[in-house]
Image: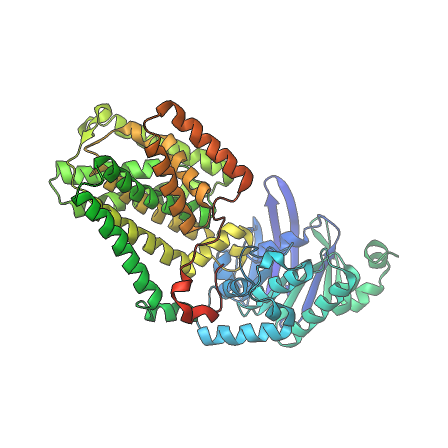
Length: 234
Length: 324
């Protein structure tokens, strides 16, 4: 469904992605793991159009994504939950969700999806009139995910959903990610918490300084020596 | 979203009817006081200036308060509106309405032209760029002898209280409706978090330019009203100090609050008018007031809250999605 081929991305003079190639198939959970600065978030930003590749091919459902800009990429069914959540702090929870459906015109469908998101995240329903900035970290992560789902994506890009959350909340968030996936949304997950990410993913790619160094079935990767040593603490 | 549809169907709800009645009352009382000469020319000028500054502050607020772009070139757009409307009414013998429309549209057009390159900049860089552009506009008019140059451009006085007041009301209503529309929501999203807004599929550049153009349009309108009221317009009036004055009104009233910046504009204009007899003390008192305000109410008088008139409409109390 999503195909990256030999993607190069630069931040000014810094060569951040040095020829990344991978694919995500429909219905999968694929995770990118790697240490700080490996280029995981850069990958997601490139897919959602916030950054442009200097070289390489990027396509989604056989459409070339390198020629369309970010809003059109959302319209084609890719939704990005950016790192650090980035909710609209001075807006209410419902207004945040409404903005997620910004590109949609079907009012009835939006209403239904909002109800669905409220069943997925009951906490958001309780707090729907509260200003988003006053939510706890975990609730903000739920809101960011709910907001991204409001655009009815086929592919959801999740950037560090566990960042800054207590272990029990991390577990809860990952349960929800599995649930979203089982209802038909394909997921590309970027995580520092490699153990958690590998435990729910079908396949995984390991990034190191802008290159993919390992790839394969998530369970098998978890068992390999390199991954255990480098990312799972022995 | 469904709320918007409802309120469109209910234009003549109780709240709006009462608001219209209150506006008519304010307009009527002031008009009567002028006719009976209880209030003299000085008050007349002050009240009309209040209207002009309210338009300026509300339009600046759309750019800075709601879309979050710190642009300090409002006096430049005001100058474009003033000179272009005067061009139509004086040089081309056009009607006042033609002058007002032409002045506003040229200003909006200038806003788009200036906005497309400069709105890529952020924060202080945008402020410096727009400040410079405002000054360029002033210097162009200063050196255009056809439009009076440094000696000023004589314009007959045709604007009266009726024109100023109702144009102000129309401007505020248009901007308020824009902000409450989905476009306005998108602008606020740009202010809150540009990256997230873009990830939601909002074309951030488009909305920044749109807010800038609408802001410039109404700044141009305010300039046009000013030109056709003041007998003479001088390029020096539209210096960067004027831009700061407008920005101060917005910050004073509350960035992101329409009612707040209306109060801010009214207060600043009235204070400076009534201190006109003590010119040496005027700026000192205003400065002290501003310092006190920034210490005790750093978000402005109303912050980003709106003073709501919902109590006029008791039926709609249980409304969802309130934008507090």
